[in-house]
Length: 214
Image (cartoon, rainbow, N blue to C red; front, side):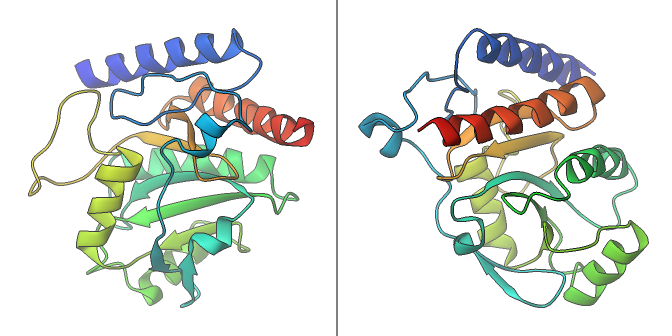
């Protein structure tokens, strides 16, 4: 409960900070301290970004960073048999998916944290039973170690606001990460909170406007 309340507080703070600026901030650490950079500046170009990656999606296709080149995407971490927060987060992500269903410039990348179980066949079945259609919402599986390393070192997905987990701990987070067209982290949102997810949708529109103004 304490972690959830802290996350809600952080989400509210980040939203207020973003509203106070013409552009969304940039993030490069687990505490999600905002950095206010000019999007097309040299500082922004050299700022932390999601590195190259390689996964397999629910269609059995290899997915790399090339898929999201020049696109905005939302990243999260889940597993198909999760009985707790995953279904609640998925229902919120459906809202994001529906909001941009006709926009191929916006995607969702959901990374399985139990790749040893979540095979391509399992992901296909999961997508079918949860109405995940088309190619804008990618369900990704791959090597467990590389998945966890990417989550920890690039997305800061399991830090949970300072409660750092060991390398052997189970990775689970409510966070949804907003990634811009250059693979910079531009927002973090509570995937269990409807208001926070609406902020995510609004911020995607802001990122699109930002890009069109460059």
